[in-house]
Image (cartoon, rainbow, N blue to C red; front, side):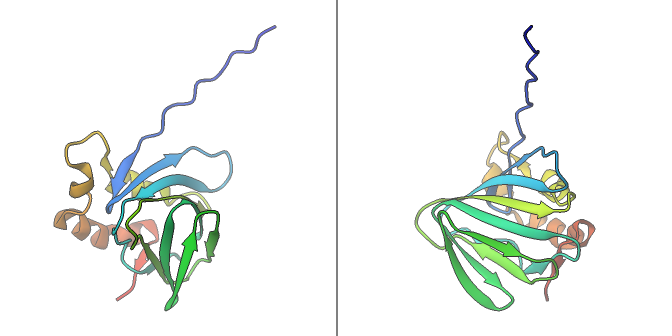
Length: 151
């Protein structure tokens, strides 16, 4: 007897603050997404999360992280954990794209990407994801997503 195969829905990819982000559905109590950061793209404003532990796995390229005042370079094949209540940000300061996996635990932070991202199918989506009105909306609503911006 053949079992029916269940077709997974294609994830929705969006540009979020200059980064191409694809969230994936998970069965566990965590959010997981795959991202690509083009060369010379800064990260989000330095921030922390009261509720979320965060992990990064660099798949290709390298990312510069700023964690509690300390700079760390994380390269392909390396990972980094950012415990809740830890001030952090990241950026790709190289001439090559960086591909990475990001996990937030417990579930919930995915809504930040869903609500504030620009569909990759939209015209000029990467540029629009860093437009002043988007940056203003991120700063204004960050707390709604447990993203506590420093300063």
